[in-house]
Amino acid sequence: MCVYQALYRKYRPSSFEDVISQQHITDTLKNQLLSGKTGHAYLFTGSRGTGKTTCARILAKALICENPKNGEPCLECELCRDMDNDRLSDIIEIDAASNGGVNDARELREAASYSPERCKYRVYIIDEVHMLSRDAFNALLKIIEEPPPHVKFILATTEIHKVLDTILSRCQRFDFRRIRTEDIAARIMSVAEKEQVSVDEDAAALIAKIADGGMRDALSIMDKCIAFSDKVTVDTVSEAAGIAGRGNLFDMTCAVCSKNASQALEIVSALHSNSKDMQQFAMELLEQIRNVMVIQNVSGAEKLIACTSAELEILKKCAADTDPAYIIHIMDMLGKCVERLGRSSSKRIELEMTFISLCTGQKAQSAPQAAAAVSFPSEDTAMLTARIAELEQQIKTMQSQGFAQQPVRRQPPVRQSGNVPMDAVTDTSKMDVNSAVLMPEWPEILERFAQVCPSVSGTLSESYGYVSNNYLLIVTKNNFFLSLLRNKENAEKLRETIKAVTGKNYSIRAKCTGAKQGAAENKLPQLMQKAAESNIPVETE
Image 1 (cartoon, rainbow, N blue to C red):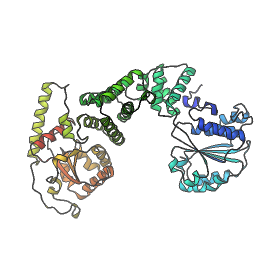
Image 2 (cartoon, rainbow, N blue to C red):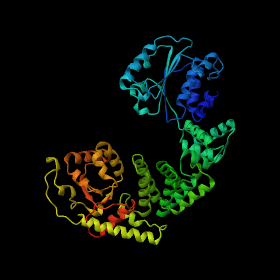
Image 3 (cartoon, rainbow, N blue to C red):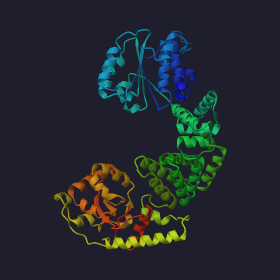
Image 4 (cartoon, helix red, strand yellow):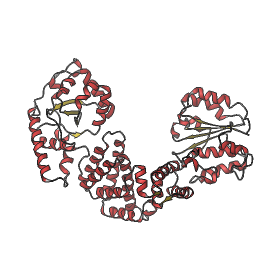
């Protein structure tokens, strides 16, 4: 039975000549091999998929080859063939991620003292060397500095900053560059021809762009595309890679640059319905906004941008119609949004808040302001009328449940007793309504709190968190939560969970609407806005 082999394995370079975008390294290694002045320890560093392990294997093969040619392994002798088939005991590959203990390092040090069985050298390739423990590094220091004449070390890492300086100083260091986009695209087309697969040039360019300088990632994406369709197009790549279509991406670029909030939210809704990755989309959009910035500031920017001629015209129009300072602001906001999306459990809401902020000029976290600024032209009059009636009823309910202005009461510290007075939990008189904003980390807090204190977290279903200065107001429809929060232990668990997520200590207050909040997430901010206009001290975030 023929076993399918992944493309990145099938087309792994077998000689220095096949390695792309790393000529500054391959030429140096070949010259060392030709002159016979090879080092005893090498350190290859760079981002993933740039050829570090591949070059390590080629170097090892060239060192033990019986008939090297111009600094390259011959690939024909018995030793070269045995190494390709993993039958050569003198070439030892070690994954430091799973063999990074001090005992593993000691075993390696002891084994290195033995002479090679068949080859001129015993070569150790240690991948992800930064995963070695400090004790393991120290155990290897001496042998890496002064190994036996028959031993060579080749270390590879993606995180050079984690490697001890004492190791760095004992190795010849080679920094691998990200592979150029055009080189990746050319290799994709070459592999497609050998595999007899139809791949559009634009699709190859998109794969190269997504791969972000990693050849292995590019071939893995191509593998998925081939499985998805016999003819690989830009749309095929978008579907197989789970990214936003190029049309949506450039439509969003125009929407953000023209501050069209409605169009931006409609695009997010469509992407969410198709299960697209919100964080990936935000990163792609950030790249396109960067392209607009380049066009505004660089003559001949076409050389620095990877896109089609039609896409370039769209970007040029955005560049001409948009204030450069606003473009910088968009990039700053999107960069922060990408960071938050990585830890948010409500990625769609996080992205929508960012776009509303960009398009309206309001603070991204200000839910009342954002809700008031966004129109919903797609909704008919009957639906809007029903929504208004529902919100008005909720405001009346909130007023009857204690949202009226309350006098300041001096209460003993919460930590002084097992249960605190109810006023200490519900008093919101010191909170500034105008500065209150919706807490974006609230979904993550609920998720963590469910693991810490499930008995209390159940009462926070459909709750919302709002902050103002050092105060946090929790609005929930379950009145039982107020009683549970009075318990010192419950309050401490919640406070610690909030601090673990946000890094801040908040004075916690709580309010109960006493009615079902069947409205969607965009209704509550409108309710908060109306309540604020009625001089009701509601804390919002």
